[in-house]
Length: 308
Image 1 (cartoon, rainbow, N blue to C red):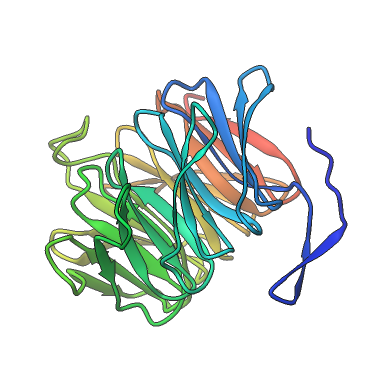
Image 2: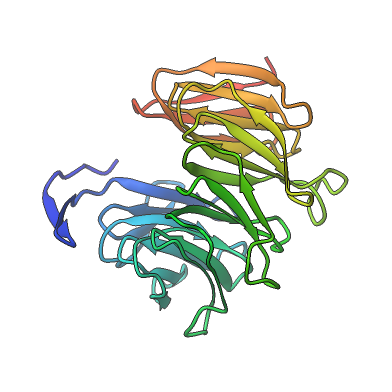
């Protein structure tokens, strides 16, 4: 475990704790390397034994998001310093730094092995390509900071969610959004695509988009039609995390109300509930789809076995 050092540094005149708190983490496709992004501006690659393999430095200020590409040769990071960086995982060197945003970059998501999208508090979304010195596409339309972006399983639709309370869906063929989904009453914190539809292991099911909001609800959207299919309303506090089961038939949601709910994506019915001891910030499924992991604000991590 890393020690937390509570000394202060300044970023744009604001006091920022210069600690090593981990802000983001992602396993590579083989499950043998873990990448972490930290408040200290460094990304680090660890082996499963806990050995520090590489230190990737450095963003000037905290890293907010980081993702391996599918092959596992590149890592992508987004930082408070307004830049995104593609790192060579084998050497730990910076392949390219992209400085297209005018405010902190909040999220990144790979489109292909060498292209990705980024979003920022500057309300902009950029699609970037390794080797290109300008964005290959930019999307404007959000009126407040864009919290998260996700490509659908085929890399055709890009979904974005914002503090402007809207969820928008974009394609490379159009400058304006394909869908502007307005139903949430407060900020939308995160979004996830279902592992269903063309090009997935569940090709005969519809593609669904889930959005989690500070209005305490989760919404499931039919993206082809641009309509809300289900509103999941059992949480009492902001919902910070949602995750689809590998089969696409269930959705887990975690909220600051300390509850993890498991829902049927087809009926929208609640099928399982669990109350932890702290606000839930993250939920995820195992690959078999019979367990859900959750992490809470009091430092606890628990696993729900849904076979019982």
